Length: 532
Image (tube, rainbow, N blue to C red; front, top):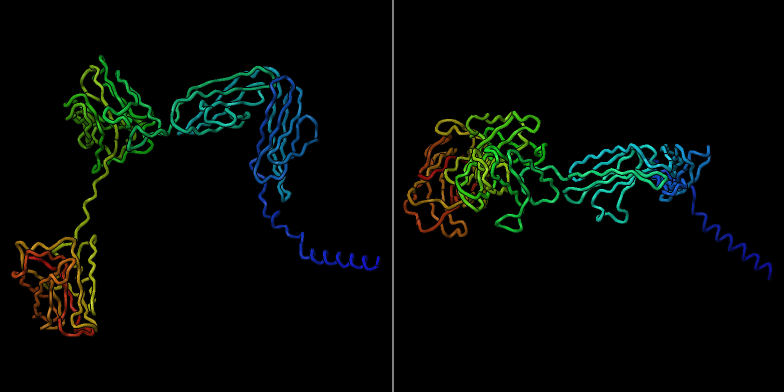
């Protein structure tokens, strides 16, 4: 019995070993495909209790583990896994903390970050705050500090920490949810309880651009007033859901008092005024008609490169849209120069009159793009020369019409494009039809003319008109050619047409009643279909 059990055990072991033999531990594709360690950084956090206890948190990309060299104990280091921190107690002093990141492939990267451990309050705090649109970048330096905290002024939006931490030599970045004015507070911390801080009020928001409205919370609608004007974003006096710019010209304001729209940097992009497209529009709500509104454009880097024009209000206490054409520059001011960069605008309400307390509202300042000409309509005469038109013939029962270069630009027809009709094998009535964009007007003109180039005398040309939706409503005339291999003008008398009907299609048939064969004998060229 023991022998049988032993044999069964050996057999089971062989089965297990055999079954596992297929698995291999030689596949290193996962490791070989791992990313190299990169973008290493470290964050310090020191307790403010004079103990010198520092929390060290390394981070990076493509890192499987970190070696943290404290900088105060020679070559000794501690292993840290990604996302974890370690703590170490330092005496007061300056240290270089080295972080070595290891990837799965065995590659390494390292950085060294200075660490200051001091129990005295930081001194000589210097900060750098720069904004770009809704984003802000913050840096700082100080003596005796270990780290910095920054409060952006919108702490209610930050969870769970109301601040960001950064080290000297690093930058803290933040993007605000909306434009506005915020108080930024930067706190320098050491290992002691005392801190040093700096506060600054900043204004953030995207740079304004055209079209200029005042409703988007992402934009900085800063204005600069001069000559005594005041301005503020306000509720539209005629629409409580709309925001506008309210400008007041108080008593004592200069005759030239005005308001510059945006910051000193003007608009984000150049205003595309040219010699031919030189107009801007602005909605104005004025307290009276007959007041002069001046709009001035300039280069925000060179105020001498400017152009201005005046428009007069025509309505009181209601909105109107005024058009400013800078080709009509104000008397005694420089003319429009399209070579200049105009990217800044100022508006002068009730220009040339002293302030009396009048209140104006403005909105929707925009560049007036040129109005595109209406698309051409396919109508008579049909000359086939307009490149913007699509001369779309529909063929039926053997007919085939195309628009080609004129192969016989001689005699009475030297135009560049003509129609070519081939009557192939098919029905005896095979031809082509084209639909116009509007019905043909037969009220005063009832004679069709068409130039034709025929291979023979006696070819019958049928010209028929039909209703757009019903082919049973039609009128037709057939004319016979009198010239072979040369252009002639054929005339079709439509004096008997019923003008109570509408006709929008033109049908052409060669030799109606005779089957074609697609040869030159059944090929004609036509052009200049006119109604006379």
